[in-house]
Length: 286
Image (cartoon, rainbow, N blue to C red; front, side, top):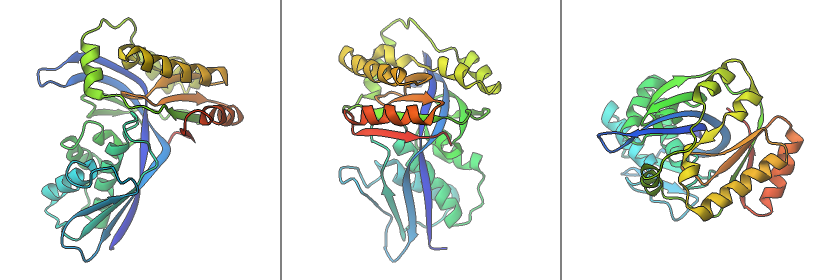
């Protein structure tokens, strides 16, 4: 085998809670994660090059070790001893960057899965996730995907019953949010509300889509600068007004998503939002 293509699925946070600041400088988190069908495509090719290379369809992305995909490949090589001198990585991006949907982490995870296939190293998904821990906090989850409770920095993963079939509208406003600045902001405020994570887990266990949607909540929304928070609230309100069972910001934002039972309602919500926000997507849980 000289080529392998792997999808890199985006993720959303059905809930996100920041519990405390850890001695190592990271934060203790408790999140319910869900992978969705919006994805990048990662292609790995063993060719005639004399070094590891990366190319993408977005010219502003780094193509060296600062890119999680390259860092993941290097970590895989350290773990397995394979020679990546002839490896070319190609990423065709569809997931918006700096969006709170783990696009970069998912690309890194896809590289780990793809290299495992390409070199037939036989590592389990859990072993690949362990390699991913050194690359980025979201990479272990992105290796495994599906519906999961993520704790610690995000690397302590417990698989959950899958989210019931539904339709999702993702909408990213045209600005970025600094994750380090948002963590700094949340350290300086008293959180008024926290997600009902236990209730969300019970709703997933009971296959209660409405109950899960009602319990979606992200504490980072309380730490947003006022103008950014107003933009997020506007998108959430549009989704709810068009029939979403619930709406929430994903990760550190700014992407907002709505969960719909009815496909026609989701399509109409996406049409309305698309007129104002180019990065609007219809997708499903995977």
